[in-house]
Figure 1 (spheres, rainbow, N blue to C red):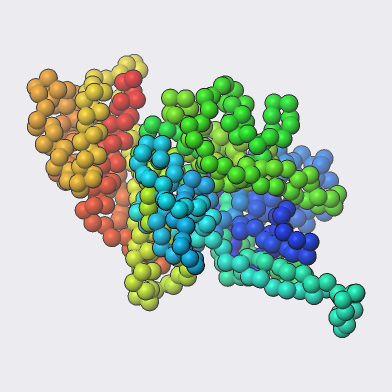
Figure 2 (figure 1 turned 60 degrees about the vertical axis):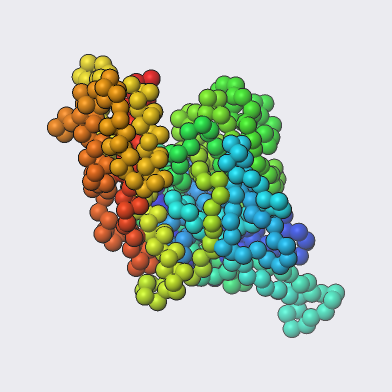
Length: 525
């Protein structure tokens, strides 16, 4: 898909109120910038350039804003170490240990209760859902999580500003997202022409978003970047093989086949895929009220219950394969998808338990960073490098064709042998010892060994499987094979470069071998 990234800096506090404000005289902001607000600002820019336009009868406006051809995604917090790295909502399956007293430490263990299904972890004795609503995806053990800083202020509204009396004055409490924070969002679409057209109404510079703009709220600075090949909001974890785990990356508005509002995600998924699906093995879900406002008519939209972002549903892979969900990942599910509702991610986390941190400020010079901040910056830089490496691995494997010119499958090692090799590969990754691959090949009986020595990989030189595997294991050169330059400045975070050690090289080399094996096994099914 093609996308336009919007990097948003809050010059003033931002008031993005939802439906539930707890009390009449309060305005409590949500912790993110809804896509509907961004779409509304874009429509306002469109009307400035076309002041006589009736949006309801303007075919161009409808295709840009109302026909779900373009999707204005929610603005989520930017990483303090990389302003272009957008957070995503944490899963409701993530739990923390309930503190005995006081507040929990920011550097705490989190357990993903999805994996209780495999007895991979035990639940905490006293647990509650993880409080921090957003995290930045990482392949490392330390997961950076945070929630936007909220700024509280009290306002007094009076009929006579110079006279404060109980009969004529009201006190209002505003809880807004504090200034000097950064958020990242995207406008995405399949139609390149429409994405290019919408860019004219997304000018870089100062915008005003949210409520109380005349009272010192809502000024933001926007930077825009066009992305020709947008890879998505999230990266799937390819270690998850037995389950399809769906996590909602935004609130989802659903309706039944009869058009009635519902909050049954499973039923809506069956309708979207057009087939019956066995019920999820586990799910962790919540609902919340969602509203909106029609600026043309000056009226609020009807309130509806939505399935909350972070809700998670676990299916057996034999009942629901992730490949069936690719279109839903791209286009979303449910109603009001053009406003950022209905976004989903697949198989986002394979770690049953992991450590977390809550980064705060970033600085430009890594020598000025504290030791903990420098370590976190290097971790984020490593995550960026691994993310890019994963993309290059997929590109490398895409160019391997296991069929001849007549579309006949070439001779491959049997899937049983490849499955055994995958097990050895995982042992090698855990032990950080690629020599286990060569040992495994040496120990094979002749019939099995011949499958690797006599059958060829369709790469340059038509190399045998045995020779290619031994070269990768001996040289540990996965990064070189996929042509990733580890010294590229784009991998630096706050000036800190990723630490490229043998462990990282082994991880990438194992990913490369694993990807080649998986493609061969899929072809030979």
